Length: 320
Image (cartoon, rainbow, N blue to C red):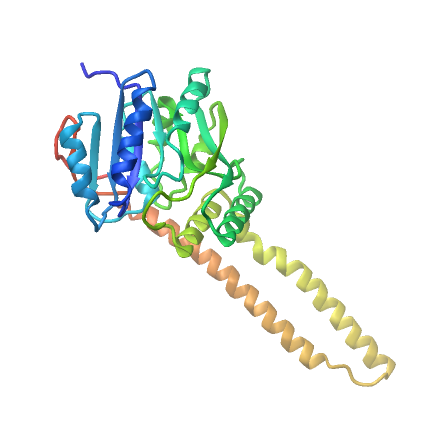
């Protein structure tokens, strides 16, 4: 019979060689005071620096450290998924390796979990060390997502959270390719609460979320939980149709009243360009949804594991 694990900490890693020693030190310090057994599951998402070597050294010297090495970079959300697949804890914590989310907040999350909450997510009340543009776009993204989606995704929250085992078991049922984990956690329900904290500046290294990746994540979130973008053609088509009718009536009355010419040709040309643009946008959005259907029906695995360390079946790959 396998030993019980109280807490699993899932830590996605991509090119974080500079910060990993400090991340490991602080995580050990925090989890050692959590009053329970624990495992630290590092998911190496195809890092190209020395992250894998550093993580392997942790695993060799500490039986609490588990390591999953992907065969290539599959992305942050998929790395979280792999960590959840391998986690054995009665509660599972997801935290990034960059130390912007303070590991010490985990202890407060555990207290809330012991009170009976099944999901405890971190809510950022302040973001230090980030530009005005980053803060503005992040705030705009969370509120746009809340407006577009059909579920209640808390604003100003990321993937930093604690989840009970029953929540993790439910999430393992979801194998969709374009993943938005914080949306899935909201979708499954259960008793949820928040813990407020100040997000710190990155301890070392550079952010791995470029503007392009942030926009993709935002689009994944909207298209995974809302069909509103598909209705853009309808929303735009009705007022444009009414405007066209009014324009036609204005031209007709001016002609019948003999009050000279009206620049109808120019206006109609502009209107045709506007309608054409809306049609192309609508077709592009439909193409995005169809492309996602195509990705799903291919049935490819979410990730491929090249090797593992610290688990019962050492080094065995997984194809899910």
